[in-house]
Length: 132
Image 1: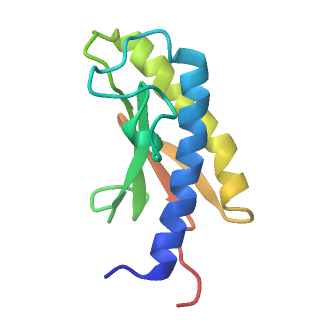
Image 2 (image 1 turned 45 degrees about the vertical axis):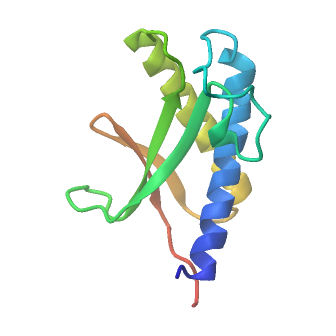
């Protein structure tokens, strides 16, 4: 059983990722062929199941991270084609920039940042759920 505030928090976070996904699709969606098992962007009810991109995050307790608890950001390019490392890095960096722009819209007044730690991007800051 998950707490309703966790569900709401992650729903808002997913909405921010969906917006980033839409922006990436508009810019890069025709650059690589989609994986054959994925329908066109917008064909399903959830953006992570269609189009060229799957943008999301997983909660991390932060063990070993200087940031403590955080969400690890993942940008997946859903293609069977080879994506050059420099292009992958460019897309990831742009996605993170877009996410930095979108987070304040979905979490107004909350101190959330996207920080790089090694080769991983993390959403850090005020992850609190408020009063339970």
